[in-house]
Amino acid sequence: IVIGRRRFMETIVLYHGSSQIVTEPEIRIAKFNKDFYFGFYCTLLPEQAKRWATRYTGVGYLNEYVYTPDESLNIKKFPEMTEEWLDFIAACRLGKSHNYDIVEGPMADDTIFNYVQNFVDGKISREAFWNLAKFKKPTHQISFHTARALTTLSFLKGIEVTDHE
Image (cartoon, rainbow, N blue to C red; front, side, top):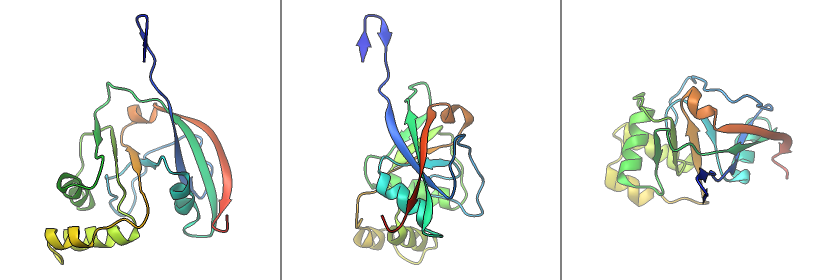
């Protein structure tokens, strides 16, 4: 949006599911590689974040952030599952890092995750992956990979959620 000579960026609410309230997002190195490599993961979908938050104990926290996009960051967006998306996830799962500040796109849900892993491990072909890969519900993830990218997030609130809601 441009008003006069000033440019105002649109802000977006993002959600992060966790076992705790996360007022200061950080990039953590996990014991396994994720879809878009190590980063701080959020989603536009509160129900998806609730599933992340409650997946281990049935209770967790839905953290909300205001995301203010910064066009000077190196951002990669995958609007849908494509060959490029599959190759990118396969490389990240194999431990190959990238130079993006932020990566956004579909998430390999539990079922898709297994198919991606089978593809990465050479157990199924690319063609077999695409025949099997159908999302049961919409998915979305946006991951922040640098300290500079994390500055685009401002904590709003954290609320306790259960898998019974």
